Length: 362
View 1 (cartoon, rainbow, N blue to C red):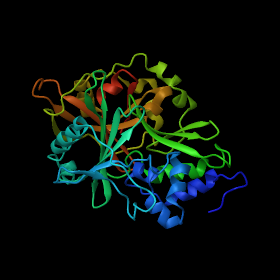
View 2 (view 1 turned 60 degrees about the vertical axis):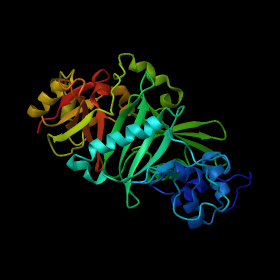
View 3 (view 1 turned 120 degrees about the vertical axis):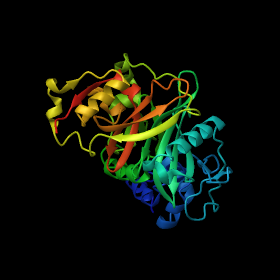
View 4 (view 1 turned 30 degrees about the horizontal axis):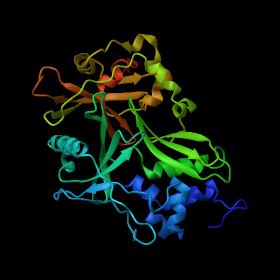
């Protein structure tokens, strides 16, 4: 790989180099990327500097827990990561691990999540400020699901969302395809990129891409689509003035119930009839959602101008309840939505005050 006349590697070259990165371990891949160095014959030092602006010595990999051992060891992508790219062990807060273990133990007792039992977990910190963590659930080297765990206003770790199946957020496949498509339009040929995985309330998962020339771009970590400029500067948050953060839940004692499916997965863009005002629904709590799905099995959630903050509009075709022994009469509901084969569960309380629900006629 050659440098251009400015002495830097071009964004297009960076995108090509990213092709060899692992789709299973995104943050280790961005920072260490030994598999890319082998498949593209590029030095590991270049990949550190070009894709993350972090030196090999400073960069850290996610910490991985091996099923059945309880031990913590650095997560290494395939290939020899020791040659020229030392990886430091990064600690995972004990409360994060405890929340993940309790959640997965409870979920794996339900049929859709049975393969999560004794699966391998990898932990990846998310910005800003490492208040959130992506926990990838892997089996035989393939991602089969994920959790996103974050802190509430009291500093207690909560289950922000979770998903079952392939195609979870922060996939390197999605990132590299997005960078390839943006290389010629959003960045100059001399740019070097700093890429940071981010997660913000209510449900905004994205990559923050900063160039060496000062420009910023945010990329949806699920779809790979560029996000509005207001995500980078944070100006969109004033539109959440009615948003109430969910109350603290003790997930160590909360048990997952069976998943209720009201309809087959569907795409909200396939039939836009739900946009009519007469299709609007009055849903203000968990019981109303449950009752509505019995009558109208296909529901769409839309937050209009800030749908990007939810990955919306969301097609809802079911839910999963969590029961706390402290308050069994008030289940905690996660709405079920789908994206390209991924079953995604999002907390209903994050949706209730931020948008509207609509009925899609069968």
